[in-house]
Length: 149
Image (tube, rainbow, N blue to C red):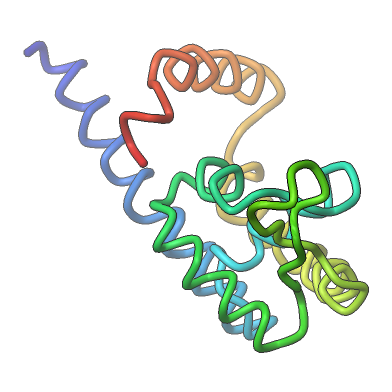
């Protein structure tokens, strides 16, 4: 491994391990909302009808179904989501974002955006953002989601 590759791998390891923890700590401190729960609410807010099957949610959160189920149970207890009979086939359940959950997401969004800017974006110029976006897209597109869930 070249010195440049070693430096890249060390920097990547730090980003992968430290940045999500920092973003999570900021969101927990400022909003009393874990990052995983924030991402679950955000994903549901982006879906048609604000609903998704559990396996879709798990895949989007890069979690196992049991991990996503635990997250949904916590969100359900807070009234941020509900489980309803599937709108498409009636056999399973959909996770549905409630109005209370959407409002919670809207309150948390500015804090998360401020944290992401402070932790990541403020350290990059426009060219670096463009290059990093393209590079991360290339890396991410070569990992099969099924391999990690």
